[in-house]
Image 1 (cartoon, rainbow, N blue to C red):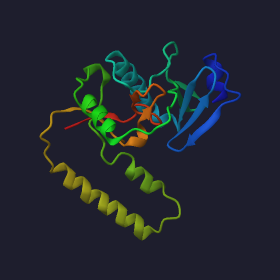
Image 2: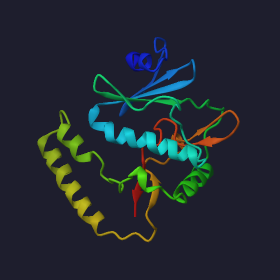
Image 3: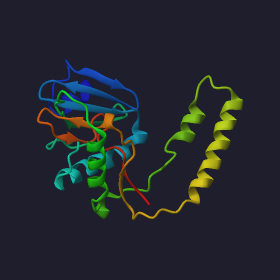
Image 4: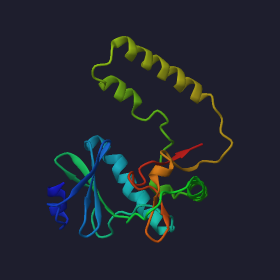
Length: 200
């Protein structure tokens, strides 16, 4: 994180860890930046897409987390893709379900440009990889999870969707919205635009 900040002219010495999970998120109080570090270079294609989607959403005026303007992103430092985001200063209340539904309605109405190269929603995502990498789980349980995954994938392939293809947020809940100090709702906060994908 410190090396990535230095590479773009930011001071990461007094960064605050916000979350360590799928990504590491750090807050820089000056100049109000969030540093997001992916687990490995395997995530680089997805991180590149996140940057493109963020810039597209900004162009169309959709209220979402924004990547820093004058920084070539993502950087890869020690095998980790790193991105820099403008920090949204939170207000004193949580988003409501009504606000969530309004944000999703507006997102679903957007026409996505072809150059973004968004893919169909991988409903099961990295589930198979996580099952194979699970530590301390009995083999019988792993076998059950593998079999159930195959069954569900088969059932999903039989579904037919009435809605047209368009953008979705793959982790839509009120905790992924943030209300700023002026009362404006932005989406997402902790997971910046990472899950905007195609799906029928």
